[in-house]
Each structure stands twice: as structure tokens, then as C-alpha cells.
Amino acid sequence: MMKPILFSKSHLPLVHARFIISGQIHDPFLAGNLLESLLRSAPIAHSAARAFVSSFPRRSAFIYNTLLHAYLIDNLPSRALHLFDEMLHCNAVPNKHTFPLLLKALAQTRQLHCGVSLHSMIIKLGFSSDQFVHASLIHFYGSLGRVLDARRVFNENSGSGVSAFTALLSGYVKSGNLSSAREVFDGMPERNLVSWSAMISGYVQFGAPGEALVLFWEMMGMNLRPTYSILASILVAAAELGALPEGKWVHGFLERSRMRLSSNLKTSLVHMYAKCGDLTSAKQTFERSRDRNVDLWNAMIGGLGLHGRGREASVLFSDMVADGIWPDDMTFVCLLSAYSHSGMVSDGRECFESMSRVYKIEPKEEHYSCMIDLLGRFGFLMEAIHLIEIMPMRPSDGIWGSLFTSCGTYGDIVLGEALGKHLIEMEPYEPGCYVRLANLYASSGRWKDALSVRAAMKSRGVELEPGCSLIEVDGVVHDFLL
Image (cartoon, rainbow, N blue to C red):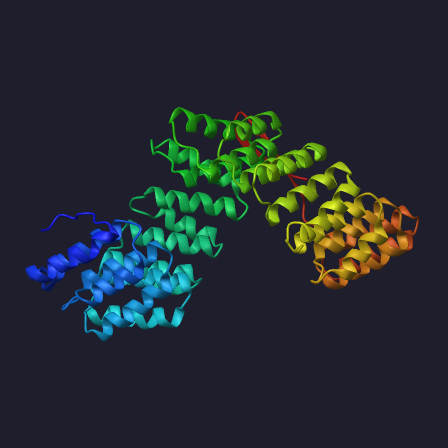
């Protein structure tokens, strides 16, 4: 077997000529081995690689698989699928290594019907029992939300390995079905770090950060080394719960393990410290970071805003621009939110106006929401109404709800009544709408109207769900219904 040798792009014609003269170009495996070496000697243009492949007298599945893999690495799934069409046209027979690549490309391009057709080909060629093809089929269906089909494929192979279990688990997590995902997780004969990561991130993504922490400590008790993605998920969970000790433990683990802090982890650390109330540690983490990308700046600006330090957030934004970092959509969400928490109405107006004028970023719904919240929170109700009227998109229920709350704060009963009735029409089974309108009537002495709203709420079967409070004792988070 020829050992892979890395060739530069400039050597391609010479190497190609040598293979033609020696006759090695007729050996599909050696030609594929050379192609793999060429693709590793980055950067090489895909067009040059395609031209190189087209010169092969015989093109094996190995040659096509090598180029398919290169397309997927470079996030070019459509080109990979076109290459497969060429492969079939040239009568090259796909093998068990071809189909996982194609299924990944079809999942990325969300082509369900083509995937079903490919599934039929897999069965016809007898590759459905191969463990990697089997797992890839499950992943394909699960990634497109077809978890029942993924489960059916999973059940067709009684000897499913850890890859198939993990693929099914990930499909359930993606669909938000955490109970079924946990059932698969608990039933796994063995688990790898990918399966642990999928279950932990699923809990975090779908609002169960406490379960994520419990599962993480279970994993650590088995002496498994967490991956970057797992640690990032735990930092998000700690931030959501305000669990500062857990967040600090992760930070300490990263430092003890001398793991290189990725930009994502640095951002998660700053966000966690800010959400947990430790703004000093958030600043220290931010200031120690040399390669600050826009996400890290946003996290620090948002953290300052969360603590009512709008002026510092504004200065940091200026430092960010001076440092050559161009703001994005989220930057202005963080900055407008900071102004809202700090009562900086004039700065908020200027910031909102400069988005499109200076930074060429058109405000989206979340920017309008922040600005309307800022105006309403400090009594500029009619200006907020005007902003809603000129919004290029339909205002969300959250925007109306924010303004309705401001009406109650400033005693604008007329506007508040109109908004309250509008909210009930839009969300007839949302208990908060009824409660806020009833409270608005009660605050102005209109007890009959308040009782009427409560009666309407009861007649429609709308019930107020109990609230929940969290408290951490000795590292364990407990929740209490209120």
C-alpha cells in the first residue's frame, strides 16, 4: 500500500504525469490514495481535484468517497450530491463508506424524498445492516424531524451499536421529546461522550438545566472527561439556575486541565458569571481574553446591562468599535437592553437610530421590542405606540404585553384597557392577560370590571399556573411551587 504523501498544488502536474507514465494511474486504489494526499495538501481547489479525477481511466468508489468527504468538510453538500450523480453515470458502484457521506449531505440540504430513495438503494445493495450505514439512516431521519421513521429503522436492527443509539437519542432531543430521549439514553448498553453531550445539551436547550447538572455530575462520577460542548452546556445551565459554584467549578476544571479556552467557552464563562451576579469575575475573564470576537464583547455588554450599568456598557461598545470589531444584531439587543435597565432613554434613541444609519443593520423585532420596553418603562407611552405603528413587522404578543405593563405602572387606564382587551383576543387562554387587566381595573377602583374579567377567565377554563422559585443548598438546586 502506498503511504500518503502530501504534495503541493504546484506539484500536481508533475505527479500526475509521473503516474500516467508509470501506469499507476490505472490502479484505482493508488490513484485514490494520491487524490487523498492532494486534498490534504491544502489549499487545493476543488475544480483542480475534479479535473484530476476526470483523468482517471478507472474511477473506484474509493476515489469518489475521498472527494465526497472533501466536499462535506468544506460544507459543500450540494456539490457532493452532484458528484454522486456523476458516480452513478460512470457506473462506479457505491460501497458502505459512500452512503453515510450521502446521507449527511441530504440531511444538510434537507432533502427527505431523495433520502428515502437512497434508503431503498441501500436496502437493494444489502448495506442496511452495516452499523455505520444503519446509524447514518437513523441520524438522517432524526435530523429532519422524522423520529418515528428513525425509530422504525433503529428497530430493524436488533444489534444496534452505540452510534445507532446516539443517533436515535439525538433525533428525540432535536424534536424536544426529552422523555423518549432519556429512555433511549438509560437503555444504552454503553455510552460515549457524544451521547452524554446530546442528553445534557437537550436538557439545557429545552428548559431543564437542573436535570442537566444532575446528569453531568453522574458522568463525572464515572471518571469521564467532559468535552468542550458538554462544559459549554453546563455553563449555560449554571447561568440559568444562578448556580455560581457549579460555574466556578467548570472554570477551575478548565484551568486545572489546561484546556485551551475556545471563544465559545470564554463567552459562556462571561455570560455565566454575569447571570450569577459575579460581575467582577465576568470582567476578569473578559479582560484576560486576547482574541475577543463579537460574541465575547456582546456577552460583556449584556452582562453590564443586566446589572444596570448602562453607562459602562456604552463605553465598552465604543471600545469594541475602536478595537476594529464590527457590531452585529445581538450587539444592539444587548446595548438597548442595557439602556432599558439603566433608564438611558436618550442614549437608547440614538443607538436605535444609528443602527441603520451608521452600521447598516436594519432593526429586527427584538430591537423594536427592546426600544419599546425602554420607552414604556420610563413613561413615553405614546412614543412607544408610534414606534409600534411604524414597525415593518407585526408586533409580537410580548411587545404588546410589555407596553400593557407600562400602562399599569403609569396609570394610563384608557390605553391599558384597550391593550388588555387586545391581548385577551390574541391569547384567550393566557392567564396573565386576564390577571393584568383585572389588576389594572382594581388599581383604578373599577371593581365591577375587575370581577367581570375574573369571571370571563373562569368561564373559559383559564387557570393560573403556580410559579416556581429555585434555591441552592449545599450544591443542590431545589425548586418550590408558589
